[in-house]
Amino acid sequence: MSVKVTYIASNGATRSLDLKEGVSVMEAALDNGVPEIESDCGGVCTCAACHVYVDPEWLALLPPMTKAETGLLGLLETRRPNSRLSCQIKANAALDGLIVRTVDPAIDG
Ligand code: FES
Image 1 (cartoon, rainbow, N blue to C red):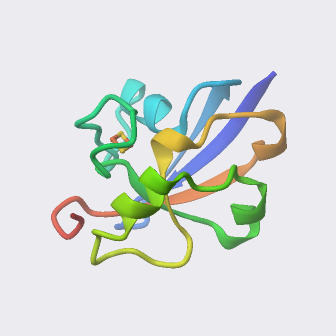
Image 2 (cartoon, rainbow, N blue to C red):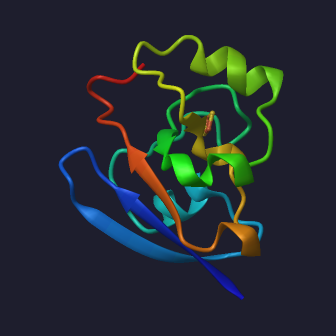
């Protein structure tokens, strides 16, 4: 089954993708040219370039944050309570319909 994820850019542009289970929200974005999601570390949680804001109604369904993710997010001035690193969010059936908002890289970091 595929997992629908919608990305909303900082300018409001919306893009929906169907992810295979196990693929991260970051990987799918890069593979499909979704703007404002980047990766300097390849998804091993050391760069924070894949920062997104998760629609609050989905937050409880995400895996808990690792210390590494919490630490990286703590370095961002743009962090909000619903911030996550999209490389740490892997598609699964429970996340079908997930909505994330991307952050303009010019202000992130
Ligand atoms: S891609 Fe580097 S922390 Fe997510």
